[in-house]
Amino acid sequence: MLTREHAIADYEGGKVLPDRLTRLAHAHYVRYAERMLRIYRLGVGQTRRELHRAVAHVFAAEDDCPARRIEAFTKLLDDKSEYERDRRGKAAALRRKVFRLAASRHPLVRRGERLFGRPEAEVKSEIAARLERAWDEIDGELFADVIEFQRLARFEGYADGPALLARYNVAQVQAALFDAESMTVWAGGDFKTILRYAKLARLMHTITRRGQGQYVFRFDGPASVLRATRRYGAAMARFLPALLACRDWRMHALVRVRRRGWAASLDLSSNDGLTSHLPPPEEFDSAVEASFVAKWGPEPREGWRLVREGEVLFSRQKVFVPDFVFRHEDGCSVLMEIVGFWTPEYLEAKAATLREFRDHRILLAVARPAQSAGHPVYLPDGPAAMPELPAETIPYRTALRIKDVLERLGQRRG
Image (cartoon, rainbow, N blue to C red; front, side):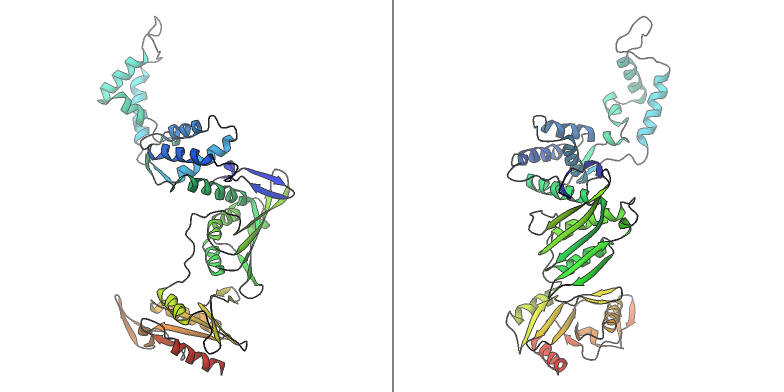
């Protein structure tokens, strides 16, 4: 990500507008981006300072490019780069040797004179001879532990120029979120993925249901009380690319503008055209789920319509999103969770979750080996006792049969 020093934004009408490169106004930036990528791709062995200067030269004739934007580009390029590190302190040891050998020859001058007769080039040649190395080689390693003089070892890069520009646009929004005090997300599709990534980003959250398949996530925390901290805003910034990879959402964040002493709002939605570098979420968590949905089809069966991840259940601080919801035409609904590959510990945790939400009608479909409840299952590290699963658990081998599910649904409805 970028840092606060790279952030560029305007403030209009109480809104924060992060810097954004558009296809209409900045179409020529694609050429700049390709040139920057070429500099880094061919720059293995060059120092960080040399690469940054080359990137700055790309924009030498561009009037519409502030220095901070150039610095932001080099930061994003460096994030995809691997530089040589002097972890063993060789550069410091080499400096001590060189300075010790040069100490008795000071002061040095470019050309010898009556009072100062030790030319720099002559002294460097003598030192190189003493160390049995070429001076150019010594000079290249003398300050290898200084960040500016680290040499590029590998460049992972971006797919192309547009990919770099897209990453820049997202990074500027992330930088604007560093001072966010709160964030609200209205989610339709992919709300399970949004919840998963919010937990990974360690965002404290509350969830409210607004209609069928619609949920409101509110993220706030220490930054709303302790305004001096940036950690929670940084967590929101890390969460943003995951949100951008999802569908059907809109976001509203409250950002504290420190220099001006007031708050501004930052609004985004899935229709704003920002592109995440993360892949879109998979529609299904397993081949078993995908196969079951394909066999069930879009039409109801015996009055039951299948909905993918249509409910979020809450119990105190625990959140559970079952894999499927079956909704009957008479208004009855039943949830179902599918377990494929498992371990005894995983099944115990799943059984505990079902006990936590025992007030809801939930079916559990488990791969056949798990049906030996109470009997030892032999794993690579020895036998382990299986937890006791609900009596109405639906067993399956390689695919979940619709007939078995409809039978259980009929029993639940009755």
